[in-house]
Image 1 (cartoon, rainbow, N blue to C red):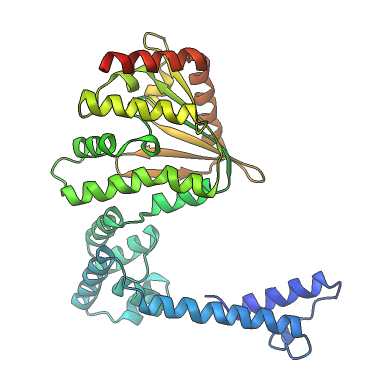
Image 2 (cartoon, rainbow, N blue to C red):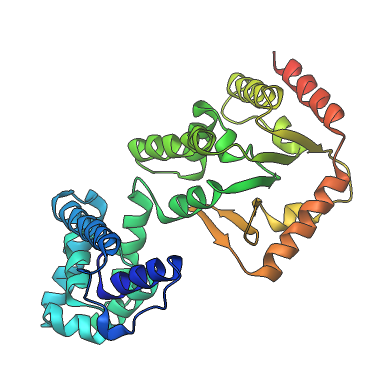
Length: 327
């Protein structure tokens, strides 16, 4: 929470160090009358604290999290536990649990597992949480990757089966989602399509990292939806190459390259002043990877894909040839 004693103390120590003063000891944390600048810091943190609390109280939570919270509250009541009792058992504040039950706070997986265990729900809480995450307009994996990429200087992307999501046209994305989510509500497919196709415009509005995309030849030759949809998708890919948004390399079919197919789609994200990250995609979203060994392993695989790829000019010519065959 903004405005906590710890934050005020840290802010004061930072201010004193910047002024060349020896920081006061913790017992002076609450004093600000002798330092006008520190009073401004206190006032700003307090303002942020009040704004954050008011926003939490007035914003209506997403319906998926309201439903999750209602189920959690029902299970707690059925178990005969009060909010305070269950919160204590799970090592969280009662107000935090209250936020989960109203849908205003989205719990972390480890907290959900603890709640499920203490309530004896046999996976019921976890399944409800997974459903809420899937239906959320801003799922966790989407928030994590978009936040990371705001600060990227380069993004290297590999895919052996599909045009990567951020470069998909709406029709292509809709066809992919429909095929991989049989029986799903069309409205949910449409919502996921909009999330997917909004990722590139949002990134380019905040940052313009260098983007290198390596695709297997299968990706551009395999028709998704219809020949017309595939043709428009290849047109879009060529436009992104032409306007400098990305650089495209194609790994031709018939090579002995197996690592990319076995690994699945991923991207490597590099920064100016921090260690690189990787992002591996899966059927329901993706996961951000920051373990050095795993990032290094994916980097080696990406380098191998580049070694098998055609030159940029030859890659572009191949995409144009395939596009022409679809006309």
